Structures are given as structure tokens and as C-alpha cells.
Image 1 (tube, rainbow, N blue to C red):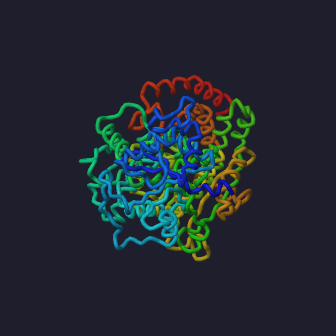
Image 2: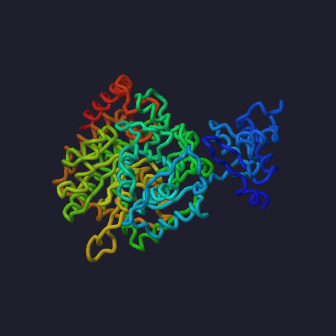
Image 3: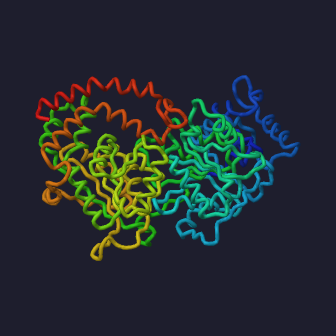
Length: 596
């Protein structure tokens, strides 16, 4: 009860680009200052006693001096802006979480000019979006910091845009990929009256500095990796980054907020001087425990929508989830049994991923849905398999090495062309990518037991569809995950599904004869020769697959070994390739000797 009485009575406020710790009473402020982390974070370190405690009366008097002799309405003291993360964490541990609210209607300061933008009259904000916004703007004219959880396809972007124009001050939008940056820009232009000249993007290809930045209200959209990058930058990128860090922002919108607690990104939340922060996500889960840090990095969860309710109301597609159990082929299973579980873990994983029976089932599903005119996405975390399979079928693929312009062209063809109905995606397609007409997912391989990845991939087909799959079915979208039987992949699959099961989804199992009926001699991996060739490639390229998969996983993330364009220096690539050449050659010879 004592802790409950204190919640909501301590705040972290931003005024004139300076941070202030506020409390309803002097006693509460004194409790906060009893923390060594907070005491070491006050702006005036000369106001500490020799034992490290704060001379509170003098620190409060310093705030009066900053205000030109006017006493603050509540007890407060100034905090060093570079130590905001430490202050918020310490207060959270003490059971005194710091609220971050923005009284934007009363903000008359010249440091944060008004943003001249409104929602267009034809923009429709749905009931669940209004409900989520009502939790941000509980008090008229005041915006609360926190997190909104909406399923993929339920309009998180419009919620973020609506919050930006309602606050009407500078807005910073953080997202995970350059493709998502472009999507946010297009949706700002689609839904609001904001001028294109007032939208700035900070990506590898866009670094236009803000003109007359101190007096200009604007929207800046960038990625976590661009703000988190610590290496050398171009002149324009360095200038725009310094502008972002120096300016005062009305709101910071954090898309895919579950990424924020990562070690390389978490400082972004506290180095940007924003009055309030709004986190958006469909999956507030991580496989580590860092998701709990979002409570003080961004704020508490304000709203979470029911996936099944939105589906019943027609705002989400009705998805049939199917798990297809595929027997391992004899040759692949023999190699799998020979590999040691610990030492050869990557080899075992490559074998159950490249299981020819999975690829045969995948090709069957691709052909089946293409004949019906459906748009299909095939996901694979194994990059070598992704590229090889896509090329054999004559389909486009997108992985980390594909340039941004080519990605956009492929996605455009998939969206608009009747001849491009299937594309292959790696992990770069997991987050913040808008493919509204996709209605089928086939998942060949995934990242172990990641619940977040499973939900994010399902989200690619959750946009509402115009009609049912056929007259006899109540489903209008399908999510297939292909699993090799009698391998750890079955355990990982069940773990991955936990989050979606909690949202009300269930998985239909296809096995035995149902799977065998999918086989056809005309399929690319149906013949023994093709399977032996695939096995040899699999054995020979395990080391290369490891390198490429890791690179691909970090494309949308910060990597200290990359430059600001997300590229790995040629010397490092050469070194990585050299270390695997000998092992790959030996494995290839072994495969040939066993009948490959």
C-alpha cells in the first residue's frame, strides 16, 4: 500500500532542453536522492555533501535560480541529461517510477515550435485505435509516455501518426529498417496534411539536415541502427544526428519497441530529449528478460488489443495456422544421427532445415496457392537455402545482401503484378514491412524458439482480406510452418507457438499420409540425385551458412563492424570466408564419399 501511494507522484520533466526531477513532496524527493545513482546524476555535483548525499535545499534553490527567481510549483532539482537512463532505472528499483508527461497545450516555449499538420478529413481512425489513443491522452492537453500493443495489421502506424499531430510539436520516429522508414514517410503524407518538405529521413541513402532547425517544426524518421551507430559518418549524417540530439522533441515514437532494450539501442531512448515517448509493438515479448526494462525506458503498457476480437470484427484476416510434420529423408537423417548434438549443432540444424521432404511440401504449397491466385511469402533463416530454392523456382528473394532499391522493386512487383505471386524472405522481412495483399506464409526455417518471430511473421498476412479463401472455408489467410519430425525442431516449433496460442490461435497438424500426398516427381527436390546434391551442398556450406545467417540477422540492427550503410568491410568478409573454406572443402569430400 505504501508503494502504491507513491506511484504517480514522481516525474521526470523536460523544460528548455534541461531535465528536472519532480516530486509531490519534499519527502519523496529526499527518498529519491537517497539513491547513490540519482545523487551522482544531479546537474550540480558541487551540491553534494562529502558523504555523497544531496544538499537538497540548495539544489531546489538552484532550480528557482534557473527559473529567473520563480519558485517551481512542486519540489524539483535538475538532473544531468546524460544520465537519464541511470536515474530512471534507479527510481524504478526503488518503487518510485518516474512518469513522463507532456502538457503540450501549455507549452509556449520557443525551443519547440508548433507543427502545422492535421489528419486529413478522409482519414478514418477505428474504434480500437481511438481506444489506444485515449490511454495516451487521459487528460485533455496532456500526453503520457507508455506502450501500445496492437496486432500486426491493426493500424499501429496510424496510432503513432495521430499522436504526433495531436501533440503538434516536433516528432521523432524510430523504426527497425530503412524500408519501414519509407513506409512511415508515405503514411504521414497519406494520412496528414504535413508538407513533404517537413519530413526528414536519416538512413544510409537520406541524410538531409534540418534547415533552420531551431525554429522549424518537423518530423524526423530514422532507424535504431542509424542513431546507435558509433563509427565514422558522412558530414550530412553527422550534422543531422547532432541536430536530433540537441533539439527538443514533443514526442518520440518507438516502432517495434521490443527492439529497444537491446544493449546497443537502449541508450537511444535516453539520449534524445523528448517530452514523452510512445512505444508501438505487436509482440511485447523477448526471449531474454530485457522486455521488463521498457517499463522505465519508455513507460508502462497503456493499452493492448485482443487479436481474436479484432479478427471477429473484421479488422484482421481470419488465419488458419497449420503445422506440417515432414519425415527426414533417409540420407539426411543418417547424417543427422552421425552429428554430435553439442559439437555439430549447426550441422544438425542445417540438416533438419534443408530436409528435402520439407522443400517438397513447400513447393506443393506454393503451386497450390499460386493456382488460386494467392500471394505467398516463403520465410527461411538459412540464406544459402533461401537463394538456392528461390533460383530453382524462378522466384524473387530478399535477404540482407539485396540492395534497398531492389527490395522496393521486388515488393512493388509482389504487390502490383499478377505474374509475381511468390517471394522468398529472410529475417529482414520479419519486422516493420507492409505487404497488405499477402495471404499465405510458408515457413521453412526460423530462429529456434522465438515467439516474437512467429507472431511477427504471422502478422505479414493479418491485414483484412476482401473475401474468404473459398465458399466452404471461413479462413482467408494461411500460415504454414514446416517441421522435420524426430528432431529438436519440433520442440522449438511448440515453444514458438506459445504467444499465438495465448492470443487464441490454434495449430492444425498435418502428418503422415496428408504430407505424403504432397509429393510429386516433377518437384525440384524429388529425385535422389537432387537430394544427394542438396546434401553435399548442405554439408559443404555449414560454416558459410553460419556467417551469412548472422550477417542477415543484424541487417536491421546495430553492428559495430559495419559502416553507416550497413556494409561489412571487405577485409572482414574475406577473413570470415577464409576460416570456413578448409572445413567446407573437407565436408564436401565427405559427402561425395558417402554417395553424394
